Image 1 (cartoon, rainbow, N blue to C red):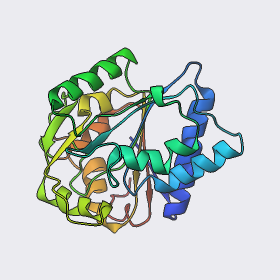
Image 2: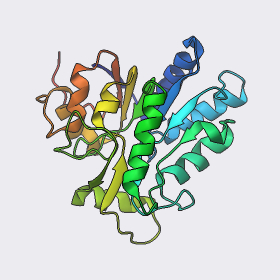
Image 3: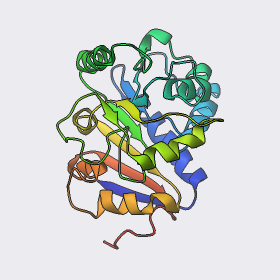
Image 4: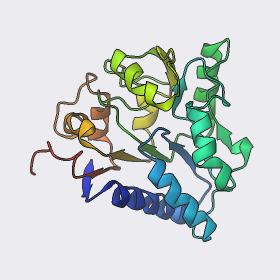
Length: 244
């Protein structure tokens, strides 16, 4: 795991976008990407859209795997993972819809949705690049503390803190007690992982991920043993890290 501290959220976002661009440019074959939704990657999305409009990167041959979503939300529900990705990124960069693979979190048979995404990931021979945020409790996607390191896609009961933080994505109170997510095993097996963290509210989680024990109590600590994981963070998110 390689940590990089940037001066600001804007610098972190630009650096993340450039690393994604370089990864796509250097790839010999079409790649499978997995991007987190939420607030953290929005700056990166803006930078990638700008690069696309300038002709510096193309996504036509990229496939995308959805990281997670709130159970009960359709792709058209504002605040949901797929809705956010469509309106913050996909709609602006020419990604063919048949190359976008997301959970249908409103499906009556969630076990079937889990199976479907597991099959897609297997068919794609895994994820080539995952760009993730980190939750305040150390979660990756909706893999909450205690999630097994060898787990694949699954439905999960969300911690109270995750439910509370999640309310910021909606204009009215929502029931957010369950999520659907790819698993830690699928994240750990990605060819390359890029974790983004900004703000002092993420400082404790970042410290647990990088300096803490390798433990399912901090899901993100699984990345300590990843052979190609970079962590980009601003000064506030890095404030508790030990000097190496």
